[in-house]
Length: 312
Image (cartoon, rainbow, N blue to C red; front, side, top):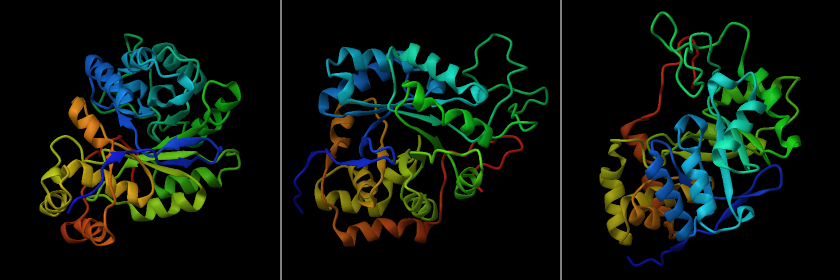
């Protein structure tokens, strides 16, 4: 079956009224050199949406690639994220991210996880880390802090001009319900970035966010490192039918569901091919929908936040 491949230009509106490209470049697990080259390559190929985070340790090369691309800043949508050790001072954390990025503002600033981390046991002053408690486990701050308090501070940041919008990441339906029910919540998150792919379709979460005007963003849309998704027989068969790569099938499945997709790659040819979109038939779309129903749900990103149940 032949299909016309073209660069993605689709966008969706955030609840702020701003426009966000549906297809962006993820930079998780990219080294400094890989991140710089990947972002530069992506922007050259037509990407206008770049996703980063403080804890990735690559904001500086991401920002340098953005500047070196020659594309005007206002034509790009840039996201970064608040790390757990800085939940009590997101204003300062954002300013530090902007310094590393070399940018005056980001378009979206996300609370990376709904989990605050203690800093008392950090000895070297590096807050972009996973602090460890004396018991050898992650030093989670459950004493007198929670994500609702973090959001109370985070929601004030758009007024500073340092970010155009704020949102969350790795929030469950119940997390969002608790956040939205709080009397201190004045701003509905613009986005919720979560793991999303055919093995983890998150139908309840997608539906809930759509009903609240929260844009869903899919990280690890191809599965995480070592994921069997790219070798799934259903995906491979559909890819052969359309004459495309399995990764393109997975990306276009997500786009057909109507949310933001953030595939990560450091290979120029893959970055270019991931940006090509085509029309997946309703029949093939349903075949992919059925993968998790037949094989069960599989989550690849599930860190142990000691004492905090993340995905309930």
